[in-house]
Structure formats: C-alpha cells, structure tokens
Amino acid sequence: MEDDKQSVLAQRLRALRRARTWTLKQAAAATGVSASTLSKIENGLLSPTYDNLIKIAAGLDLDVAELFTASDAHMGTGRRSLSLAGEGRPYETPYYGHRLLCTALSHKRMMPFHTRVKARSFEEFHDWSRHRGEEFVYVLEGEVQLYTEFYEPARLRAGESFYIDSRMGHRVISLSKKDALVLWVSTHADIGEE
Image 1 (tube, rainbow, N blue to C red):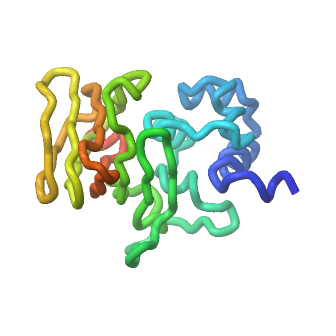
Image 2: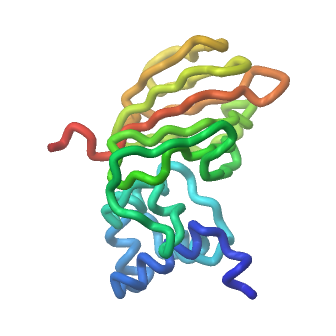
C-alpha cells in the first residue's frame, strides 16, 4: 500500500494539514514553506531541512518532535520523557543523521538530537542554516568544524562544544575519517519571546 511506504513525517504532516482543512497554499502561508515543498514532503519525495522543520512546526503550533509522532500515538504534554541507549526517532538529511531524543513531550523549549555529522565540506551546503532560537553542540566522537557568518571557522574535538545564536548562518562538517558524533540541542524557535 502507498500509505505504508510513506514516512511518519509525511503521514503526520498530511493529517495535520487536513485536520485544519488547509489547502497546500494555506499551509504554505502559515508555515513559510512553499506549497510545492510541502507537497513533496507529504508524498515522501523530499526530506526537509531542519530549518524547514522548524518553520512547519511553528506554523502548525507544534513541537518539532510532534511532526514525527503518528497521529494515533500522539500524547499531550507530559512530565518526563526518556530515551534509552540506542532509542530516538531517526531523521536523515543530506548533511546529518539525527536521532530525535525524548520525543514524548510536546511543546518543549529544547529539542535534543544525537547527530552523526555526514557533511565533509563547506561547499556541500546550498545555503547557510539559520532560524530563530539557539543551539548547543557537544562533540562526543571525532572532530567537527563550525562555520558561522560572523566568525572564523572553529575546530572542535571530542569533549569540546559550541553555543550559538541560530539566527546567524551556520554549518557544521565532520573532519574525521568516520562521521563525527555530537549531542545537538536546539531551543524552540520562539524561546525568549514570552
């Protein structure tokens, strides 16, 4: 069946849009992501960038993790969420292999990821990643290079970390032979606006 082949994200996004009785054009207006991009995501033809995930979640007034929770498994706000060793909801992009951690809570102010940094060069990226919020990255294994709009590139090894304002363009690449592993924590897009 076609629905069985679609990702949880594709199914969830379509269900959320339809529950609001929105057309793709209305969803695009609410999220700031083009109707054609939303259509490709809903049909499993495109894996959105993290920036687009944030826009979609904000436009739907959801936590990013809620985009990956099947409608029938979705739960409201809870008090605690655990991710045991090896657990987490996988999310692949061309540059990173993310595992979203502690996804059971909705409307969190932080989004933690266990990330495998696959990108190997600055030129692999089409554009800077930038969005509202802040990010903290702690290198677990390997070595990464952080590129930002306003600073010289920084090399970071296991045990080192960075914290940035996510509105500043940024990219992270692996300098290791193997993909570097990091703990990546991003704040919700509207943090500090209350």
